[in-house]
Image (cartoon, rainbow, N blue to C red; front, top):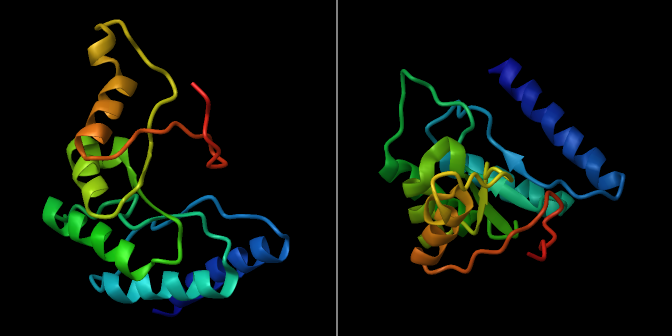
Length: 160
């Protein structure tokens, strides 16, 4: 527990340094979830944002999955919805399209996520326009009741 606490303090200090420098943190991610208590984790993210105010997006689903403790799609969707409610002071809740897949990402858009990460900038149309990756993503976003908008890493809309 001491090691994890030191890592959290170091991460918080790094984010505070971003704030001091007058910069914005594009995305706060969870590398690996060490606790099943996501509510406490999300409350700490909201508290961090209240103190620094520089986090642009929060990705509540971990980047590294523990094969000994896999999550279900239901748990993942519930975590996204809870993140949107608890971390309401961060503008965007993000889901990694390539890591969690199109179906979970699409459902996540209906319960609080508003940004998809891990989308390839390359659009391979060798299988035809309807099967091109970006067109599939756009179609899934529309099916979730949202309007697709392409943006760059600074969250600026890309005219297309």
